[in-house]
Image 1: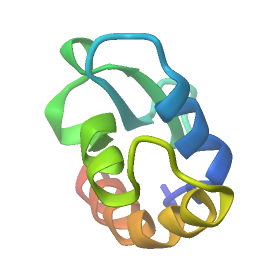
Image 2: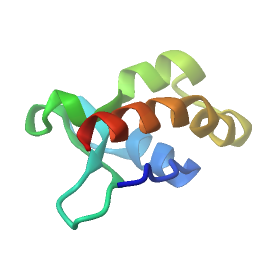
Image 3: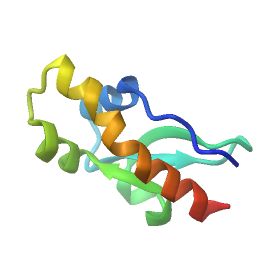
Image 4: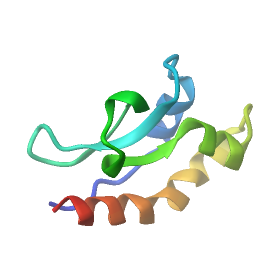
Amino acid sequence: MSAPIVTRDDVWQLLDSPGEDPVLYLNDEGGELEVDHWAAAYIDDSKVLVHRHKVVDAIGDAPDADAVDHYPTLLQPTVEEVAAALV
């Protein structure tokens, strides 16, 4: 399976998530990997890409569009590592 591309929309969804301790993770339920978000308590740690609090630490709690647009570039190597480990 190839690694999906994380987008700024993925980052915004994570930041806007009302859940407790939301994460971006790799969802493999549909046969192909995709970036998704959900509460960390329900996601296997091996699929987690990043916790919201880590994103907030990196770009602030009120980030501008430029910060959010740049963050997927920083996260993409992690996506590729996690995807490779799931194969």
